Image (cartoon, rainbow, N blue to C red; front, side, top):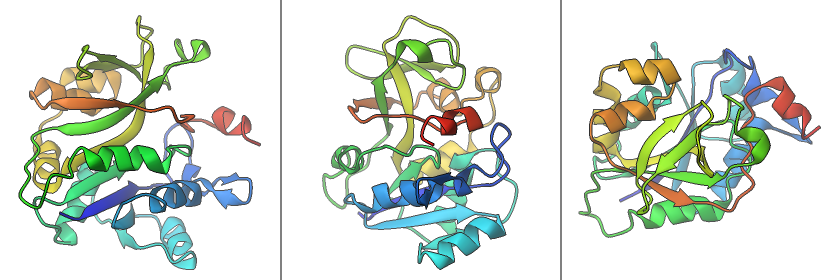
Length: 231
């Protein structure tokens, strides 16, 4: 079972156009995310984009990349398309890495990988993701996705609204390729549309999502105001 990270990246973010190419220190956001993932046990990392600016940036930095062609409703659909184009094995582990998560520690990637590391024939029927402690100032911020979970760390719900939880969601998903392809085929649901959170669709289709707790400083860059915190 290969462990493959896919970073969907696009310039046309509604809340922050051109986000992957914004500079944080002497690196772009995309570079920082890539290098964090590259320091983990992932066997391969692919940046998936349909934007020439991003693809040229990848080529200049010797990042493996693929040009995505077509319309994709979300990162899951884009990752599924990439996994099929590159003919990954159905049992390969695919880690969908959000392009705005600058501070996911390599150990977090490794902890996720360990959840699947049970041999070549191991079939996992669920998704693994990360959660972190929420800060008081994030509780009413709609850009911060709150996570509700069971005592066994299984996902119950995700929301942008204020809810009594101590956890926020960190943008990374792991699944075997066969399940990724299934997730990409599920139809849009009303709840997902109301929250603009694709993982709700999976819960509504009875796909279990396991939450791993992370101690990393998790700050998603969702707006220019978020980025100003680091400049």
